[in-house]
Image (cartoon, rainbow, N blue to C red; front, side, top):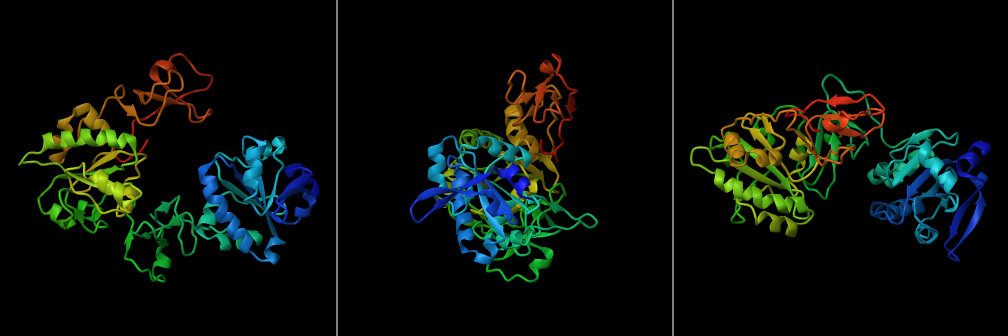
Length: 431
């Protein structure tokens, strides 16, 4: 074990002494027999600087018995010794020496570290317990450390039964099942950050009402899609409008507009959408939009909403539709018919192609003509040959290179590996 540990971390580690604010070297062998938490992080990384104090607080509060079974080793991704020294002062654990770049690089490669912060927990025999350490600390810091010291991970899951949905990136905040399998319930209050599986729902008494999340790619009526939004805000006043009132007007479709004041593309697109919206309104077939905010605070929400002539869902009430539609970025306009058929996931692009005709078509509950393969715009995809952004037309991907795409013109020039033609997504797919 000692030989394997030294091969992994080197002969010596660094320890910061809070008493004299100095660092000293210790033998790596002092960690023999312990569960190791490898912390990949850097001073320049904002998410890391947000996470480190939370991890440090939890580690300082564990008892001596647990510290005899578990230790943390900082693996720096900093750019210079000065940043490493400054950052390491915040950490009550060990570290690889900054000068030992060879071991740092090998550790990142061995454990497939693709982003930071990252916590990889390994057993005394150097078998991976979990690579999901950051999320487990955010989920329950003290309980995560306790589980790791026992050689267990905090998160667990089970096989889905029948047609149960698997919420890949969500954990139950009560029993820590991740991915959460089956029905999922959550609080519409953003500050609560609570998600419950069906079993824990019956045991939990929460101060706010909980809503059931809708299963992505299943079709629900418009009434069901709007069920989690308690009311709508009138675009000209603060008056609350019953959500059901919108459905009484025999509407054919609704556009769900996900946007935020902090987002420059949103601030550019919103005035364009307002102009098209006003031109599209007719007495026979008016088009309806609901603004669902992705803003972080009420002031930004109010400011962005003031630009829009359509109603808005109240702040922090859009979690259920956002999870249901699973859009990849904002601004996003998703149009749904009264029976729940998705008419368009690409409202922004459709408006760019068809202008006011897009809204007029949707207002009748109809779909637009799909773009031809040569016209299709692959959002968020860049041609790695000519750098066309976004890639337009047929898209070829390399399964060996990974995240490597070519347009049809560059595909004709050849590539070292066999390329795969990507099929154009339908209305239920994201790219």
